[in-house]
Image (cartoon, rainbow, N blue to C red; front, side, top):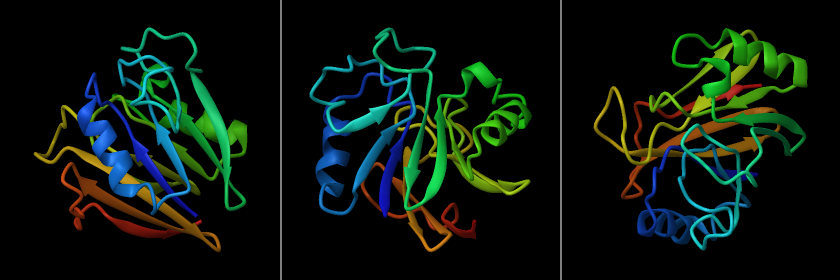
Length: 169
């Protein structure tokens, strides 16, 4: 099951539609991890399951959510409520509490995927204002038989190989 994950697009509209259009036949699900700065009713956000970031003012977005992807429980949040710019410990505890094998978050604008204490943490980076690298990034997560392929892409749809990884869940 392939899932598009994007975060921190901070008001971008055309670019968000371009990404959705680019992958509409590749993915089964689309997630936005907050700070879209758009209305939940906007055309750009249609098709996304989205959580609320610290820069989102639409109260229709929940602070977090849990989704089941190919039998794997995934916890979604923006990250600001868990102090992810300083530590992943609070988010780890919340993901464990939720029984999640994967925790997806944004907020720090730093792209990466790593396994910590049996939880896969995925931050797709920022689609508008990346930190620690030039590329504006998003992820396509493919979960097959307890294996997660985490493939990072730049805004033009090119794979960012040095960030992409495969991890056993």
